[in-house]
Length: 250
Ligand code: PGA
Image (cartoon, rainbow, N blue to C red; front, side, top):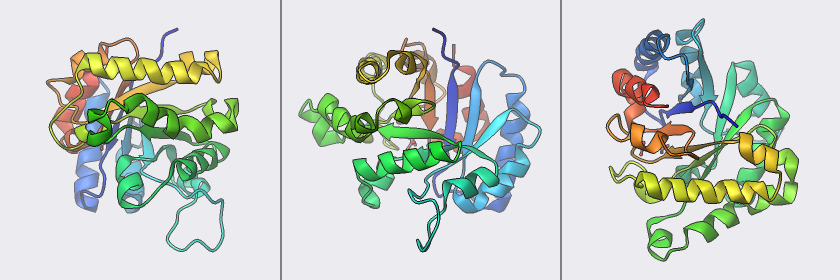
């Protein structure tokens, strides 16, 4: 079953309104010639409206980098999924390793955020991945199983329309990338975990690779069977590099 490739730019807390306006405009313009891939840009919350304007009438989608697990209420500083939808978001990243490690998000809260996103009609991009020390101990699969566990408890509904991103923490922003074979192995393992919940959903779910994807390594990574695109950090801050990565999907 063919899965349409998806490339997502995670701008993290970079940029200003002027930068976001110029970069989103340049990417929107260049994306017209790349019809075979879905593209999304995820700026920080306060730049969402600027980017929404920059990509208006283009085929690029908007995404946020995190969301509250609560619908509304006394949660100072949080942003609800419905508000993200109102501003034009289609996607939201949940459980990025920086959120897990710097801001204490647990496997359970990541699953709750994902559910909140789905309920509001957004597509969560659920990030999974092991740290360097877990990688060295050969614990990648068990870490991923533990990260998926709260989703398994929720059952099929948790995987109706989601994207998964495998991002080995040791490869994020380090210039070190998982080899295409390593990425394929873990992606296939993730798909086998999804199979246990719902085989059709597992076939349809796009699994992105993230971690130092650059124009010169994207093509080999995206050529693998279970690698359905990428979640791009550093290289998404340069329009030409990001577009080149988008062009590298099969
Ligand atoms: P990187 O970041 O491409 O800069 O390694 C990826 C990410 O954190 O999503």
